[in-house]
Every structure is written in C-alpha cells, then in structure tokens.
Length: 501
Image (cartoon, helix red, strand yellow):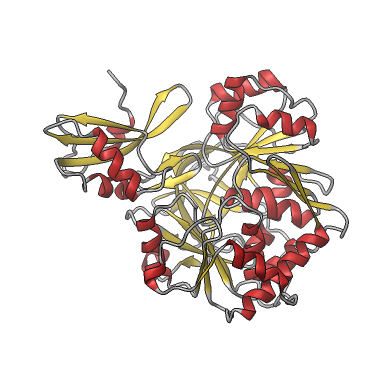
C-alpha cells in the first residue's frame, strides 16, 4: 500500500479561553528585563515594564479618541517602535489594526482605504496624502500623545474572534486583507521549538523593519511572549552592520530574509562567532548563499515555509536537522498533507501543500470576500497554492507556486497587478511580469513588454508611481512577442526561464 504524504502526529494544547493576544504577548517578561533594544546612532532600551505601560496607555488613548470594538485602524507607521505599540494597543481593546507597508504608493493606499473603510489611519511615519477622503488620522505627535492617557485593561474574550488583518497580494491582482483571530499568536508557540529553538534568555536580532509582518511576529511578538529580548536596527542600510551588532550586543539568534544573508556573505561575514544560529524565511535561500554563510560563520541557518494566511508551518530547527534542498518538516502540532485532485498523494509525489482547516494559526478568511475564502478549502484542508513533495521522513521540498505569484524579498506580488501598471504606459501593446534569475542565487521581478519603441524609462516612471518599490520591476525587457499558449494566455513559465542573450 502506498504511503501517503500526510503529517499528523496530534495537535498541541488548545488556546486558553478567554484570551487576548496583546495580554498574552506581554505577560511573560519580568518588569526590569529588557524587552526591546533599538539600534541607530544610539541604543534605545525598553524594559518590559516600559513596554506594557506604553501599550496599555496607548490603548486607553485609542478609546479616548472614540475608537470602539471592531473599528479598523490602518497603520501607516514607519520603522519605529510606535508600530508594535500601536498594534498591540489596538488589539488589547478590540480595535482591529491593519498594518500596511510604508512603501505603498498613494494610489495603493487609496485603494486599501476604499475597501477597508477604516475608522482611523495612523500616518505616524510621514505626511497624510488622504486628507480629501475625510478619514480621521493620527500623525507622529498624535501617536506619542496617546501614551499620556489612563491605562486601559486588555479585553478578554473568545480566542476565535477577529484580532488583526494583514494585506497580501491576490492572484486576481488585487491585494486581499487576511483576517486573523487572537488565537493566531498562540499557534506560533509551535515555532518556538519547531523553528527558532527559542529560549527566555535569547536575544533575537531581526534584520527587518518594525512594520514588516515577518519582524512583527518572529522578531517581536514571539520573543516577548517567552520573555526574551527583541533587537531591531533602524539605521541606514549597511551590510556590514549585522555582524557588528551580533558581536557587540550579544545576539544569540539572527533572523533575516535570504537577501540579507547574501549581502553579508558577499561582504565577508564577520562577528557571528557567538551566534547560536540564524533564521531565514520569505523565500528559499539559494544553496550558494547557504554554503557561503556556513563556510564563513560555521553557524546553521534554519529555514521556514509559510504564508500570510497561516504563517510558517514547515521548518528546520535545532531539533529538525536541515536537509539540503528541502524546507524542513511540519512543526509538531501541525496537520499537513500534499494533495492531488483533492486527495493526499503518495510520498515523493508532487502536489499542493494543504493545512488542516482546524489549524489554530489559520486565517478566519479574506475580508468581505466569502467566495474567494471558500475557494481555498477542499473538504478538511486549506489549500496553500504551494507545489511541494514530502519524502518518507516528512521533509518537504518546495517546487514552486501552482499559480504565477512572484516573490520580492519575502513579499508575494501578483503579476497581474504589475502588468496593469505597465499597460498604463502609452505605446505598450502587451505586458507581462515574471520573476527571473539574473545571476546565481539572485532573482528579481522583470517586466516584459511588446511595443514599437524602447519604453523602459516610461515604464519605470509609471510603475514607480503606481506600485510600491518592492513590486516595481527591477528590469524591463522589450520583446517582439510574448510567449502565448494555445488558449491565448501568457505563458509566464516561459518568461521565468528567460535569460539575457
């Protein structure tokens, strides 16, 4: 009998009820322990007592502004501790925070505001371009003033109720708001052993910005939930800074996207001698980067596979040894399967990764998109869209998407969204976007187009106005014709295999 590609070793302890995400995240650290260190020109330190006081007072300030349970708060905050404080404060009192990248352009933000209908927008990281929409806003001064309010108590309730939303690119070309319950943070406990090897005495340095959800979860909330120290750098870009920070400030775990590891090894990794290990997520780390990192530092990097709808669920870790070419194994407490035609396939066969619909970390759904939400489920499974195989030991090999989604430094980007921006350029007859490899281990978003003249400059200008920087193609390629299939659809796979002649 064929062994099926299913991982099911039982679930973890259920989330407590009643529950509040913010109360849980801030419960473990002792008052005088260091919760957060922020590095720029100086070092800013927050004790757990300081962090709790800032969150509960900010929560009280939000209530004083008239925000109420269920109201949506759009966060447009830059790389600043105000971001996690606002996020946790909102969740504490039932306001639903919706973080968005500070890199989004004005047209992108306007589309989100029209869909989301937020009660307020926090523009603490810059000017408000939406004054004409009549949406109440908070600037940096207003955010700071919230901390002068009387502290509010976190509201306890069902762990299944809505806590926050995050935006992810959709296959239709329109970003979707993913709704998460309070229990999502409890599910992250499966990562403590299954990915991080996280301990209360750890000092976790994350290379991302405060307002990136990878940083928010892995770099901040998870260390805080176990009582460890989170560390974030907010200074100017510098590939040499990470080893210095690790060495000078005794970081024990370093978390980053593969692109940061690539920059480090290209510059020559130095200063990581006392690091216990590294973490990587967002996209698969190229083997050439992994090999160079390990040769230069002698330290392991544990990778993880996940998505906005369910966070990370497959990983290597100190207790799951990395296996070359794989993303690791399902974390203990998860229930996963590799599906083909709606049923589990055999071990070693390719199929689509699926997560149990009962996974505590799984989203509640897409905001006001019930049909698209329903389409992601097949019987007892949530279908991720990632094509994988699972070997007899449970190791999962990522084979790509079963759609055409692109990856830009850990952000998933829809080609349809990029193509729509390209078609606004006068003279473009056809447009397509795909992720291509420009050199070993380096992949970028490329824009392919058909036109009667070279329009690279015009396309670059229009895309930079319409799209966030991470969505904007890094290169444009003029073609005589785009590869088309028999059904007259663009063959993006052929474009992904494109190489410069």
